[in-house]
Length: 168
Image 1 (spheres, rainbow, N blue to C red):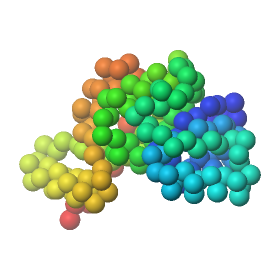
Image 2 (cartoon, one colour; image 1 turned 90 degrees about the vertical axis):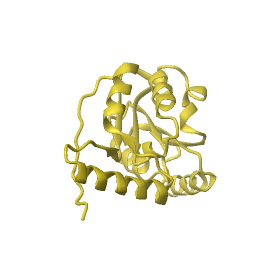
Image 3 (cartoon, rainbow, N blue to C red; image 1 turned 120 degrees about the horizontal axis):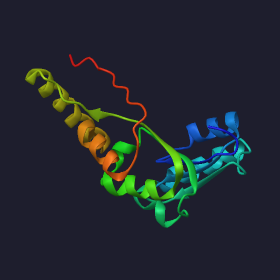
């Protein structure tokens, strides 16, 4: 991120990362949350840290950000453990695509379902995902389907990193 970047924080929570990025890079951030409490809390933090000129928080569903921001508006967009809350990942990714400038980038840090060649390991993976989805009202995306979808929309995948979580 750079000072001249316009950035979207999709699913911002209480704007912890947004506040960090604004302070340390000088970029301008529009943050979006569907939670009125998160928006109010974010605004308090932003005022306390004197970042009102750098961060604007919107009470809005990130699936329709293309309705509140102009086409080709953002240099970057990020999802920090918020992508899994999407109930319509295709709609969300298409909305983000519309508001990104040509050459813009999306960063997603989240959980994705992977496929194992070992049926027993796969059963454990799926069991853990079921627990996560239920506990956090999440919808962990299937990595292979996600890759196919983003390519179909037109995104170019630059980097994917997976980690293995012990399943015992």
